[in-house]
Image (cartoon, rainbow, N blue to C red; front, side, top):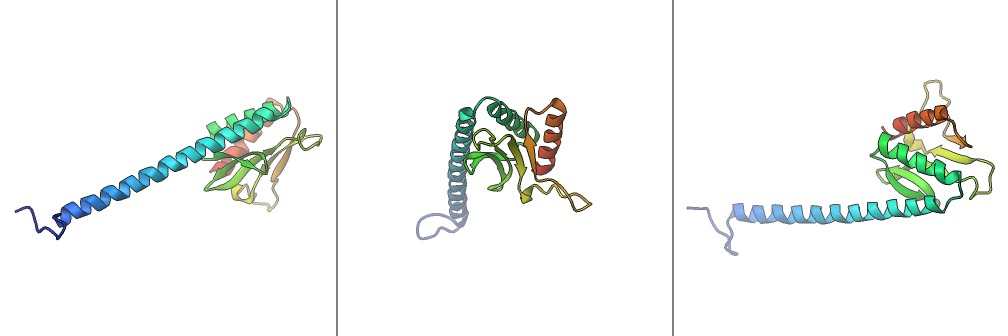
Length: 149
C-alpha cells in the first residue's frame, strides 16, 4: 500500500514532493531574475566607464579588473553615477572620475562597510588617483582584498 491519499488524490509524500518542487521553481526564478539584474548592472557600469575621458577610463578599467579578481564577491553597480562595487546590496568600493567631476584627481573610495579599520584608530577611506604607479596599484589591490573580505 503506497500510503493514504488525500481528497485531491495525492499521498502525503506526493504532496510534500509537489510543495518542494514549487519552492525549487520559485528559488530558480528568483536566481534568474537576480542574475539578469546583475548582468544589467555590470553592463551599466561598463557603459559608464566607457564614457570616461582617457586616463580616468583606464584607471576605472584597471580597478574593475582588480575587483573582479581580488574580490569577486563584490557586485558591480553604479554609485552616484560612477562605478562602484557592492556586497549584500551596499557599496563597499567606488571610483569617481576626476575629469568628469572637473577635479584635478580621481578618487578611489571605501564605505564604512569596507571595514579597513586600523588598530590605531586612524585609517583612510579615500585615495587620490592620478596616474598611479605599479606600486600604487599593488596597494589598491591589497585594500580591495581587505574591503571585500
